[in-house]
Amino acid sequence: MVDESVVTSVRRYLRTLARFGMVVRAGIVFGSQVHGNVNAWSDVDLLVISPRFDGPVSRRDVDLLWRVAAQVDSRIEPVPCGEQQWMEDDWSTLVEVARREGHTITVHDDPPASPATTP
Image 1 (cartoon, rainbow, N blue to C red):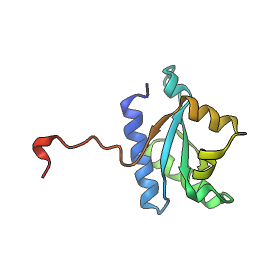
Image 2: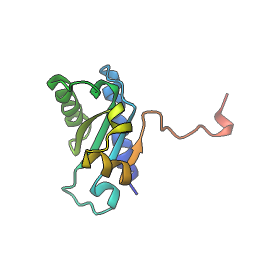
Image 3: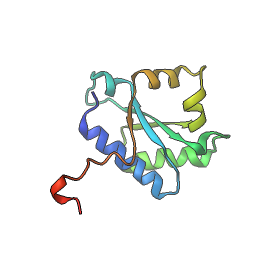
Image 4: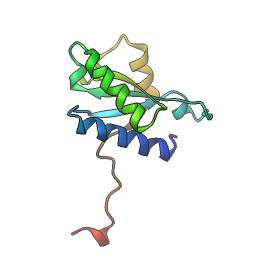
């Protein structure tokens, strides 16, 4: 189970990418954060799923991923993954591990409003 503070941080990261114009379908946390064997030096392995990465991945986009990570939470180590790659890739070990063991976080994962506050 991924710690709620990591989920919050990743969600903030994904929202910040969106503000920079990057369409992000989801972030998939994998590795030690999912397995629960974290320590003070643990990173946050994050597959960033975006249709922007279905073609050639530009250095500019990779720089954006890392620059935003440094601003939001320096533990985040983003890995670009195309939306089509996420759905169809059957050769990448990293994608397979993230599919099998990862925790999916989307920008729209806000908790629902309580019935008392719903207009």
